[in-house]
Image (cartoon, rainbow, N blue to C red; front, side, top):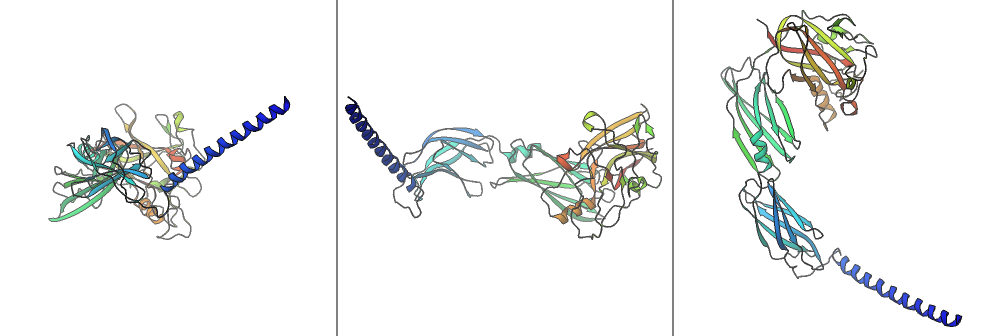
Length: 438
């Protein structure tokens, strides 16, 4: 009996081994056929069958086309093409594993003709299947519809929305007259975020420009779509630099409505350097420094690292501010790089207030975040930092504040740790613009 069981076991084992060998050979054959798809120099002259069109779904500026791929053994991709307005072919391609392809870049919401076809490893193409799709509004049209250019103080303010997050370029050309001579300028912005705002300053000086500024806007995408709009001429707002000769500040820890004046004389820093019109640069050490004194806690808990309160010496209506960061580089030159600009110990986010005598309290104006200019050469950071950061008191609606004698600058966060640094402690210069109150 034991011998019989042994014979049966051996027989079963042989049959199992045979099945395994057959299975391995089958897998090898399939694998070999599949690898043909990627052989170097592989070629044939037989075109694949065309894909079978199923349906489409409209997208903003495009469509998703659904299909059934042919079962050709050397199929490589499913492709779709169309001609844009300039007669250029726009091409999209997906793997043979998928069942849909995104076709983008249409400029209008009218029916568009797309050609769908299959391509094999040898480069043979199937017959083309004509598909007509009707896209939704394009990114270029959407951005243009919601883009605005407003007159600011010696500048233009460009605001836009980009709901699709599609990369677009925004071109702004402007023309103005100074002393009877026509001058031109331009600015280019790129956007792939939901909203955007940029200031165009150039050499615009509202006190010298006597006629409205002519503005033309053009938006383009990477598919060659473009829209242009001529805007109504804009009259720039006029302000002046507020003189600093009569400015002063309270003593450290002296409070106004419960807000203490910051300590600003740590190390080489001095309070008066904030408004002496001397900007820290290269070997010029000229800034205010709180050091580690006067910190009141985490801004998230309602406290701030420090407050700077300035008596303007007279009553003014405020329009904008220009701040300069600390820049310390012993042995540096005008060609020195970024160093501390847009980095610790400088301030990246701050809030502004004016003193309202009618309510005997500080009235909040706005909060400003200094944009970190990413991916620039080291030298470019220095040039931007040297120029200073300009912000409007009311960026969404440029105007003057109520007449006031006191201005308050509240430091919130530094640049480090994605604007979550709680210890910014230096500032080189504060300059305010506005007009003398009547």
